[in-house]
Length: 126
Ligand SMILES: [Zn+2]
Image 1 (cartoon, protein in one colour):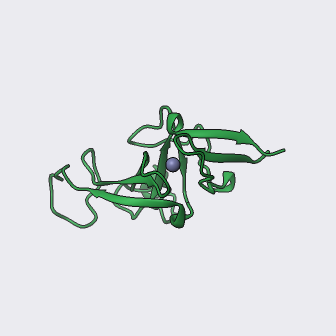
Image 2 (cartoon, rainbow, N blue to C red; image 1 turned 90 degrees about the vertical axis):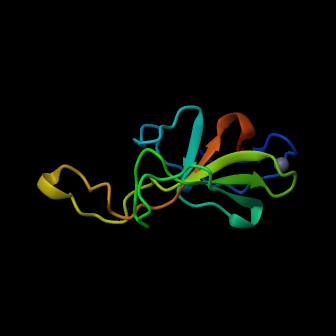
């Protein structure tokens, strides 16, 4: 069953695809409570606003830890903040990792588009 995700503020269809929705039990370091995470979104529907006030411990490109940069996702029609982009999505590798403990935290990760459930109006396609 496909769902239609609209901006709660202005009702614009945000063209979010259930196909790219992470499973509800998918584990994220930064948590997933009250939010929906997508692996791919239609960037024409949104405005992106880099939030850079969180200073990382180390100035390395691939640093990945508790403090990380995130990008604001805003509705392109009304400008309401609907979510954030994190960089803790699915690892870009199929490797089982060292001792099969799972991929290391230093492998590049796919972006995760995390939406606040409260900022969305979710309808079922009929
Ligand atoms: Zn809107």
